[in-house]
Structures are given as structure tokens and as C-alpha cells.
Amino acid sequence: MDPRGYIYMLAAAFMWGLIGVFTKFLLEEGISALEIAYWRAVFAWLLFVAHARVKRRVWVHLADLPVLLSFGFVCVTLFYASYQLAIRDVGVALAAVLLYTAPAWVAFLSWLTLGERMTTIKTTTVAMTITGVAAISLGPKLMGGAAIELNVFGLLAGLTAGLTYALYYIFGKKWLYRYSTPTIFVYALPFGALVLMPFVDFVPKSFTAWMLLAGIGAVCSYGAFTAYYAGLRRLEATSAAITATFEPVVAGILAYALFDEKFGPWGYAGSALILLAVFMAVLFSSKKAK
Image 1 (cartoon, rainbow, N blue to C red):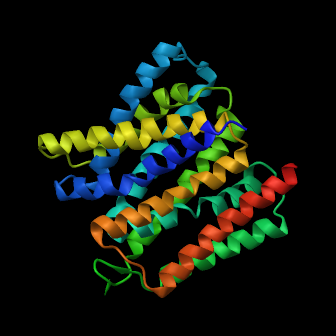
Image 2: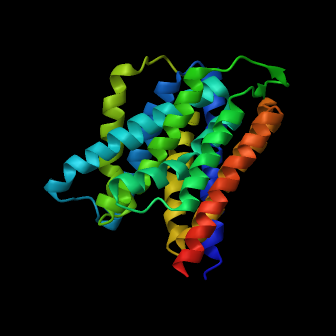
């Protein structure tokens, strides 16, 4: 197994873990969560277009356009927007943990759309994830440990981010496996941004804000997905999935170091339960594959 695969995967997880940091600083610049999501898609699209043109992989079959545009709406418009809103309302650390309810969503959606069997281990990990989310929602402590009232909208936004993140897998498994990553995002990103545009309240931006917006698109979308798929080509899927769970660890450490975000005991217990469910799911998949 090529050890460079682990380096690529850790790099991708680290770059995804920076989403919350970019978002926090952009919110302080007066940029709304939805405008952050919009510009993240636009700047990433410019880089994916350049990549696709260099690789000469721009064109797709006309019959596949509806699926690519649907992917853009679900996995760009809804995912980008919900995750930025979750970071705004419940903080970097909690939003990252809620994002990693995705494996539970994948298990359920795979049974629903791909005909995969809901085994005992899958049912168990789904139940663990739901229990973990419930524990987290009992009272996270943020901003210097001061107790805050549960933000229901932020919690729902985080769960929506987990669901739409899981749909990356469903779209790829069922429809988009024929195309390279740059080709898919050449079509998905502009459509996702276009659908999001009517809901964005654009404001004047400083040079710092523009640099941060370009950074979140270049690092957290283009860079992260490019590194992820480079790693995936060199690793087994299970090893890649385990390595990618480094993302919420990065987000949690940075949230604590930069923004003094902390969970209460229930929050830490719930976070541990969700991550344990992720590891159980991918380790079981590894044994089954062998």
C-alpha cells in the first residue's frame, strides 16, 4: 500500500477541518453564512474548470446533465449552506461532529436506494449515532464554558449537512462513477451557486474578506477534494474512511485553541459515541471485504 495515500488523506482531512476557522473569521468580517457558501462554490469552480481543461475532461453526456445538476443542488447548495449555517449557530466543534453523522445516513440511504441490506452492525451504528446526537444536544458548553441554550436551527442545519454529505456517496455510487472529480464539479458547483444566489445578501467586502473567501474555496473545496481522491487511488476505501475521520479532531482542536469552544460532559460523550460508530462501520466493512 502506497504510504503517500495516508499523507494525501490526512491533508484532505486537515483542509476540511479548516472550514470552521475560515467561516468564523468571515463572519467577523460581516459576511453572512450563505454568502460564504456562495463564494466558496464560485472560487472552487474556477479552479476545477482550469483543472478539467488541463486534463481535457470538461464534457459530459447530455443525458447525465440532470443528475449532475441535481448533485449540484443537493451537495453544493444544501450542503455548503447548511454547514456554514451550523458553524454560525452552534460553533465549529459541534458542527463538525454533527457532520459526521454522515455514515449513519449512508447506511440508511444505501438500504433505501441501493438495495444494501441493513445488517445488525449497521442498525447498531445508526442507533449509536442518533444517541450521540441526542447527548450532544443536551447542553453543549461553548465560548469559555458558559452554558448556552440549545439552538434548534443550528442543530438541524448540522444534521442536514451530515445528510447531504452522505449523498456524495449515493450520487457517486449510483450515477457519477463514470466521471472524474474535476468534471463533476465543473457542472455541479456553478449550478449550486446559482440556486443559492437569490438567498444571498451580498455586502461590500474588504481585501481581507476576499482573500478569506478565495482561501475557503481553494483550500477547503478544491484542495481538499483533490487530495482526497489522490489518496483514495492509493488506499483501500476503508483505510481512507478511517483516516478522513481526522477532520472533526482537527476542527475540535482548532475550535478550542482559537475560539475557546468547549463541550460539556454530555457533549464529549456524544461526540465519542458518534466517532466510535464511524470506526465500527468502516472496520466491519473492512472485515467483510477481506
